[in-house]
Length: 306
Image (cartoon, rainbow, N blue to C red; front, side, top):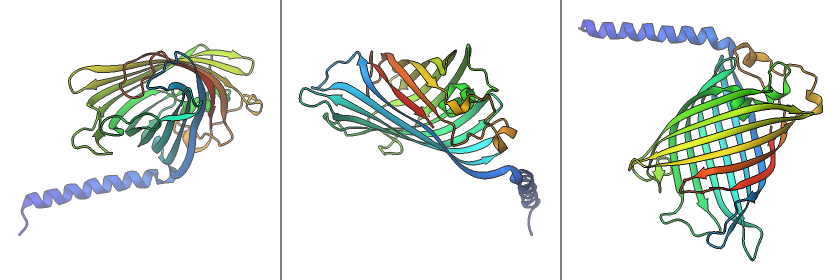
């Protein structure tokens, strides 16, 4: 004979499952597999602050990041990001030496509102030395769980919508974002940690959209990244960036490029033909980061947002 507690638990489970099924049935008409890809790529020679270390001088930096929105259900989006940054150095014998390569992998989610968003990601980063001697213990791996929020204009993900549509102001306006993270630690593993003692982190970005000059849109941004270590010390990095993005001639009509399910739920539906091309200058004001230190380095290059 079953006890009353068993019946009570079974009834609770049935009620919970009924509520979940009701939510799914109610929202299934707006849920879809979208597989939308967006990203950015850049290439920049170092312009100032170049110093020789171990016979190598910083020469160029090449970056790309590609984000895929896999699935959308109303305001909720399942995402995944892969990225790469390659540092190319110069020496007395060659102007092209692969120095270091950094890989990033970041699955997560995003919840969108009309002008801002919240997100959560599992962030994996690994750093490998190529032309210079590998650090003791080999490559560097870090993994953290990050939660954050920000206005849409603070991230490259929404800049085409902000700059190319006629409905969003992009002059004399501020955007910002902030995230906090906790590093995984314990046994050495590519999915846990290797060669670092970080425990927590905080990331922040402030972007000022200064306005436009003819077809060029000018913005300034300040990035901060603070890492707290197991011994209660910290490492901080501050980076200033100047961006000049050019609006394409086929996007000056002032039309709204947003449409479809994303627009109905305060998100967006960025069309594949909406891209930005730009020139940027990035300067590292201060960097105490032990890995891939860029203190006082400045680079001038080209960037494409697609």
